[in-house]
Length: 510
Image (cartoon, rainbow, N blue to C red; front, side, top):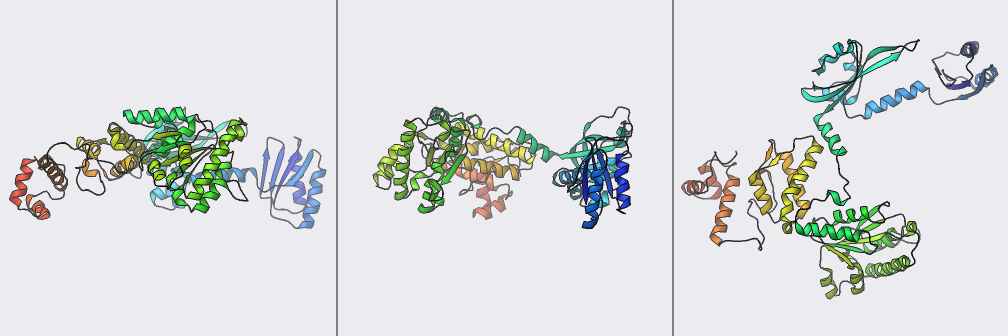
């Protein structure tokens, strides 16, 4: 049981309270006095009849203004707050006394050392953290916060050393020890990445050097302020959603949420309830607290849903013409499509009136093969972002890797490029990514082209493919006999081809 006693600052009032506890033979477990005129008592739970007499007697004391039970003592709250911080902090923490012995630690430290927390208590910190003399620092004259690179579990860490002072009865600070906070290179990378993370929903973070992508961004910026429906057309993974989110971030509804719904992920009935609501709710399109609704793959809409969406667009247009309050405006509708909606209209699979409403503002998002000037910049951007998250050094792209990335057709567009280079980052151990680290589905070679890119004769194309294939296989089959068996040729034929294409242990990294 705990009591909170509010009182005036009177000499002897604490002793009067303690005398009452002695009178009732109550075993006092803890007492705290805070500077705001409160006394906190902790004692075992007592019988109700005793409690009935205890409270009035304390209230009768001169200077006492209030007495009530409290769920915890202030020191208990502080202790549990500190414990919660220690338990959840992913970084190793040690609290040491003035002699450098560990008094307190957390699970992150114990798990890094693969030991029990209790076994660390009393251990000298010099046995655990190398590279900084904690005791010499604590024995110095002018002790301030220190930051040093140290060794912990045989790895490099950045350590912050914080001195701990406790005031004595005369409010003079006495050095009690220190708290040591360790951060790994990986954790520092995570924090650095988070600090420098750009606004993922703005135009500024979209990398574009190619004229076609720059034009798409310019158009999106112009259309962003409009309330009319905005359609993004383009192949899968080309960045339609990215442009939609950027358009929302600068549009009139930017202070309201952005909601996206994938048409193919729901039945027509489920989709209609989500969009237009039912008897219980009004749906996302009628929710004035939403800024933008992105309908992904609008070409997949059922006929009944198309009709309802057409009616909603007409209703929204009428509301806008009445110039309602900005806070009461319906969400702006944005849509995406991979298919040519005009062909769907010609095939009577898409309503013509809905088509004209949705295409009043349209942005064609170019495929990655149409914006080859962006490929390497995007690859380097994705590498940098992922490397910082992983706390790794950002590797460079070798010349062979650059050539491979630029020659590939990228049917999965930007999304496929991001996945490809991020996978390469996980497999590379050095400071440079070579084409051997790049895995592209559907082909073992780097010989990829679109019909518009192809130049030369068939013989030249065959030789290019042959050279690329041999260069990729050579690291795994570094002798002519091994490679010959793999390809079903004589070792003499393979030796001639390797010589012709300049492939050897000197030219190929094994």
